[in-house]
Image 1: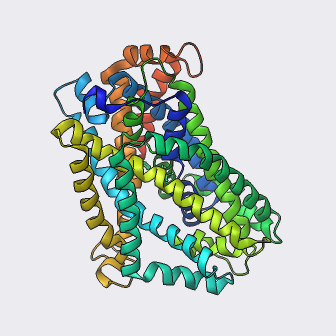
Image 2 (image 1 turned 90 degrees about the vertical axis):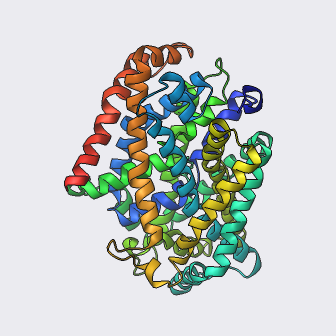
Length: 452
Ligand code: PFF
């Protein structure tokens, strides 16, 4: 992409909104509670928070600084700093992660749109059995899900092809605050339900023996990367649309704070409401957890269906601002590297993604080989989530932190941070975290998971 075509954010808040739009999505409202449910409740939450502060926040700031400095996406930024050598892997991983994450993400986004449709047209089943059966029906209908996934991908492609700034910046400006207010209302309702205390204990009181469970640590670190859109250069790409004199440090901190707050809020909604339902087992929900719990929560509110419809509308939009950034990474690469036109890049990447979304959709419709993979076990959908969230993003994050800390180097990265003036973290603290703490923590995790 030539500099003229790349464009820049209209304003500092525009960047914060778009980057927060990328970060806040299904990962917060669907992924976080699902993973807490599967992985040990409060122990998961504690590890997650530690990972966000010590491992992820420095990498997030590093990604934005790298993008702002190079004025290029991840592959271009790496090449600008060191034209030869093995670091091209960062760019390759980014393109692959963007494409494959989009392929399963759009499946869940398709369910969200269907729940919106149901809330508006026929209402959502509220009884415990009804709600679980409804999710079963929605997720099992292969053809309908292929259509909704395709629709979501097509809408994303349309937006990315047009260039994103005016639509997305403007939409996020209204949508994010409304989503936040709605989440707060639902959380208040949820924690005041009879029986909510058990859910709060599950969510907030960690079983310390589980904090050292390597499976839980791996899932929590992976979830933190996913939720912050980290490890695949999405924030390098968005940072590259900043002007050199626009701030990077405080927006980076704001993105981390907002994203984490929204994930925590989602937990305050799902677990108290879930435990208020007799016989609730958070581990058995799987990907359907929030879809089974939420309709029952809406039913306890006056005008519940309006809440339901508003909630699924906002969740669909939050997913949309995330899918745009997922698609933007491979598209910008095809543009930058192979000189494709934006239209061609969007078309090719979208079709490829759609082809890979189909087996994820069909994992839920009783296609035996996809519902229980030979040798590995589990569904094709689970395999995708596991490979890309729990492995590819942390590995990408480790490579990026090593690259920023050691190849670009603490002096130059620190000088880029100093353009923002004095503040927290200082260049020295940032250099320490990105050179030692983040990469060592991820490396240790990877080694323990391989040997364990
Ligand atoms: N952060 C998004 C979410 O939490 O839903 C998912 C995501 C978007 C991951 C963009 C990675 C990315 F580049």
